[in-house]
Length: 275
Ligand SMILES: O=C(O)C(=O)C[C@H](O)C(=O)CO
Ligand SMILES: [Zn+2]
Image (cartoon, rainbow, N blue to C red; front, side, top):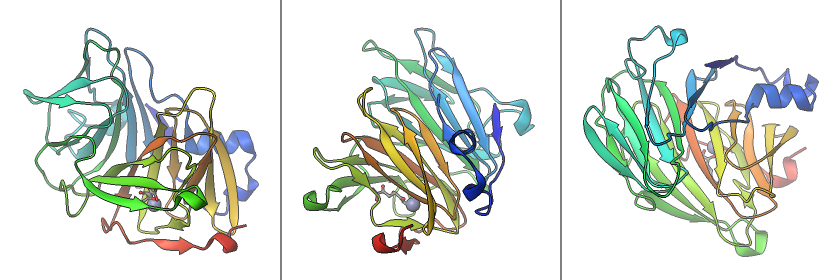
């Protein structure tokens, strides 16, 4: 497990490209036949990638957690960004289509990831500490609470699907969903925002290999960028905007943890105020 310590907004302007990437970018979320894990001290979230081969993969625990099993004190949201697969959670099997979501409640002891016949599934997992047990629940792609956002004329037309949230699948901290850009739209989360009460992470997916997303971060008046490829994740502290423009349309998993699950608890950063 890789550890990333928390960052103060004062530090960002002093960092060069390599330092910014090292601190905020999770460049290899998926490795065939492995579970990767990154522990961020921003709200103590763990970002994992599980890409099971024919033998499947167990969700392990890690020495850093001092926990008997991974979900002993945690909950997690999972989105499959690869070929169809299944997750077996304490003996119950959940079919996971491309883009489908599963909430794993605190106390789930055994989690097994498998791929189907169409190639490797790739399970993106976002986990946060939990104070109680909520039931493990699956949501099929597109079956969450949907919001249509943006305009074609400003290249930010997109469909946002909320899966784990205050009015949907219940959780302690995790709020999670998928946003898909419509063909010809490239900008996500514009106007941008911050939310001081929770951090957020994005995993960009369904982006062609030769395309990139220029992800914007930092305080609204002191922004920096990270050039990102398909299936890379980025950690956004609560004080940072998280917006981006692609050279092609794409989808992204957004996931948050902190003290307020209210989706619209956002402090907008006006487009003309950005620096
Ligand atoms: O397209 C968007 O806008 C988003 O997906 C925004 C994220 O959901 C977000 O930043 C929630 O706080
Ligand atoms: Zn946000």
